[in-house]
Each structure stands twice: as C-alpha cells, then as structure tokens.
Amino acid sequence: MEINKDKVLITGASGYIALHCISELLKNDYIVKGSLRDLKREVEVRKSLNLDLDDNRLEFCYLDLLRDEGWEDATSDCDYLLHVASPFVIEEPKNESILINPALEGTLRALKAAENSNIKKVVITSSMASIAYGRNKRICDPNDWTDINQNVGAYIKSKTIAEKAAWDFIENQKNDLFKLTTIHPGMVFGPLLNKDVEGASASLINNMITGKFPAIPQIYFTVVDVRDVAKLHVQSLKNSRSDNKRIIATSQSSFAFAEISKILRDLGFDKSPKNLIPNQVINSLAPFKKEMRSTAFMIQRGSYETDISETISIYDWNPIPLQKTLEDMLASLERISN
Image (tube, rainbow, N blue to C red; front, side, top):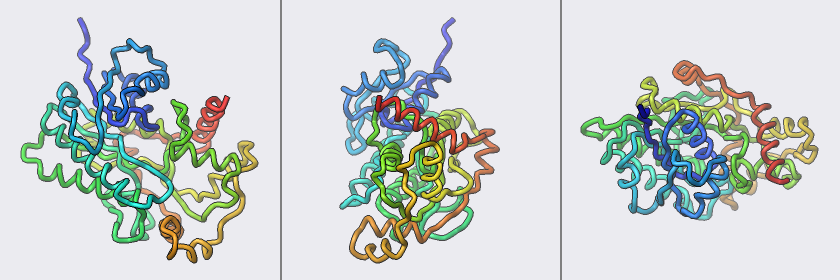
C-alpha cells in the first residue's frame, strides 16, 4: 500500500533558507513543489540538493511576488505552504519600495491563494526585524512589534509591514480556513547548499574573512543556524501548538559584530577585522547618507536579548552553537571556492 504523503508549496525555492527547508521537507517524507521566478534554475536547485532530474519528490512552478499569475494553480494540489521568498539586502536601497512591495504583495498573494485552496497551514518566514527595533526593550518577546516610524531602514520596515498584513488577513478570515505561524530568525548563518556566495549572509562573512572590511560598526544582532530555521519551519506544519503564533528563532543573547569577527579570527581567518568604526563617524554621516542612518539606528539600539522559552517548549529546541554554525559555513565556502 502506498503511503499518502503530504505536499508542500515553498516559495523562493532557490534561496538560502528555502533550500535547507526543501532538504528538511524531503527528509521528513513530504512531496515538495518549489516556486521559482526563473524555471531555468531547476537544474541548479536539484544539483544543490543532490537530486536527480527525474526525482519526482520535487517539482517546480513559476511564481513572482509582484504578479498574480499562477498562485492559485500552485496551491491547488498542496496541503501546506511555506512562504519563504522575500527580498533581503544588507545595503540600504535608494527606494524602500524595492523591498517593501514584493514583501507585502507576495505575502498577501500567498495567503489569498491558500484561502482559495485546501491549504491546512501557512508558515511565513518573518524576522527579528519585525520584533526588536524602534524601541529599546532589553528582552524581546513574541508580543513585541518594531516601530517603523523610526529610522529602522527599508528591510526592517518591509518585514514588519508584510507580517502585520499577514496577521490582519488571518484576523479577518471568516471561516478560519487555515492556520498561520510566523518564524522570526535573527541573522542567519550556516552552510550553503548552493554556490550563491552573493547572498547577504555569505557575502557578509566572505567580506570579513577576505579583509574587505577594514573596520566594522559597533552593532549587535542575534544569530541562528540556517538548519535550525529550516527545522522550525517544517516542524511547524503539523505542530498545533505553533498555530497562530509568532515563533522567535534566534539566539537568546545578541552578539556584537566584533564578537563574530573574533570567532572568525580564532578559526584562522586573520584578515577578519579588529578595528571598530567610531560611533561619532557614523553619526556625523547619518544626516547625509541613508545607509548610515540605519547603521546609526542599529548602534543606538545596542545589545538586547530574546525570550525563546516558548520556542524551546513548543519544539523541544536545542539551538546549534554559533561556533559550530560558523565552522560549517566556512567549510562550505571553502568547498565552493575550490
């Protein structure tokens, strides 16, 4: 007798987090449909996951966050939806709508398609960006929301706006057709499955270990292993305790940029920066340069902690240590360079 396997649509299938989610889904016997803006990337995705071209556990469809085409067809034969796709850049864009529009519109298209299909649950990749900024609360919890009226920057703003729209959508559901969970990673590190060293996390580490940053700002962020993020996404699909919850998926304490750099030096990457950019330099440039305004804001935010007690309770979560995360990430970057 053939075992009935549930099918999951995952958006942005070629992305850093999405590839790990697909790997985790396949390990847990799900059938996966991955969306791509360019279907020519199917071979690349399959190769990244060590899958044959004829492996029918994974199929692909075309979806664009900014276009209606294909969304309801994509969800029509799926049981669950992982909405992972959302633009992420470290540098501040000239126009914030470049990040906000696809984040917001893509989220609403995903939820509308789920509502018109037989989707049981939607899991959205949100971020600590929608929780931790715009106010100086020392310990952040799932009830906190970023204040986007502050100079938080376009990415933080995009994640907050998109997630608020998602919860408004759920609140206005008439028939409670599906459940929602949002996953909130901090800065995501860990091994790459593909060769995309231009992604935000990979390029950041690459620039540090190759000496492209002579100095770094005094900013703090929480961190998480990409493999932990993927597991929490997949475990949320059938874990009813996560229904309609915001799940913090990051370290309990924030790390200074300088601490990350020191770990890299301790691992043998001597070019990783030791010097700090004086706060007054960034503050003096902030009125004139948009990218400096968000950096100045991050400096002002300083260190903070997160309350991950609910995450640990719901998922019995034991996060991968940062040292292990960085070691495995560096090993994958070395394999790619060779």
